[in-house]
Image 1 (tube, helix red, strand yellow):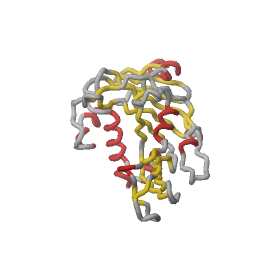
Image 2 (tube, rainbow, N blue to C red; image 1 turned 135 degrees about the horizontal axis):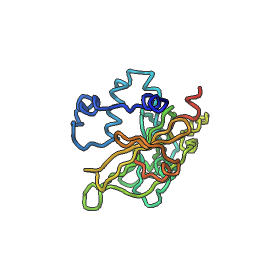
Image 3 (cartoon, one colour; image 1 turned 90 degrees about the vertical axis):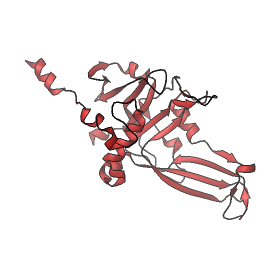
Image 4 (cartoon, rainbow, N blue to C red; image 1 turned 120 degrees about the horizontal axis):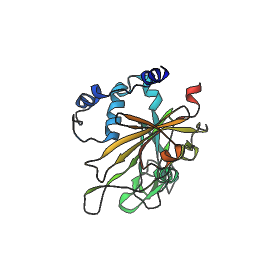
Length: 249
């Protein structure tokens, strides 16, 4: 009856053909070993986009980061731009408990002085400078990674288990390049990847994904419908946002 039809329409996809041959995606990945999902995502995306040669797919994830260095003596600013396909945000600071705060820290300016002074192209000598990162362009699909694995005071890699809240709707206008006049479109959350485990060497990954207005928990072969409140409580590792209304266009 209708139940069987629904079952056939909602079949799961077995990713075994990919996961059993991850070394073909990247030599850094090994089949049947504990691997980092964020590293896997980056490698897979690079392979799918053929390192930028597949322009149509690349354009969905491609953005530009703007690095600015301003001389504090003469005010001359030099800008460089680099491509990004995801943003890795530091969450180790105690003040970082929301995505907005993590983005603020990411785009915060710092002063380089004393031994860290930079040679100014106008002054021709080393000067104190302010240095900062901002988003020059906003991609259609914005992928954000919380740096949950960090080295402790003893040089050991440990997992940060803190909660860093994230919104269903994200506005990134405050983190864009000041040289850009255009206002970026708002984003809506479409997926949340979670790592459950005490260390970076072991654990289990599962994901929350949105279809229409409904949210689902994808945990290995099991897919379960969940409330959005459960999604927002998740200890996220990777967040995926898309431009609001993209699928309606």
